[in-house]
Length: 150
Image (tube, helix red, strand yellow):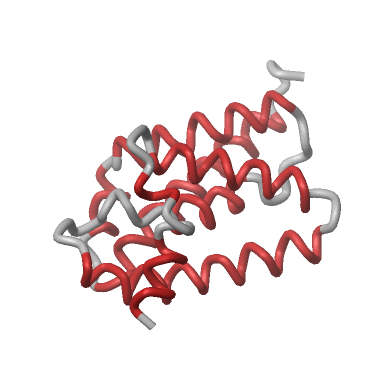
């Protein structure tokens, strides 16, 4: 079970990328989003499935890594990235802005997000990224309805 959870948590070893594994996983999630964005049912259930899978695999795999939030575990970025675009109309500007904001919040770990990282087991690994995705989505919603960006 440990090998399976580690494979999933590292997104089949994408997490061992020598350059920006979290960003690589986020970019892969953008590709998945582009494939499923037109079917809200598949998009919703795939996102929920991946989040649940993320909690499970992160909790089991964390034991094999010394860090509190191991950079090799990228299921959190991959699954959370799909939350970024919920109820956001597709456009290249939202796609790119969402990716940049999500990665900024995930990397910088602004204070409310940093506190979530301290939660036990896989919760800390997953919840800081989920919060970064929700924050990003809220900003995109504001931008979406901003009269200055129309």
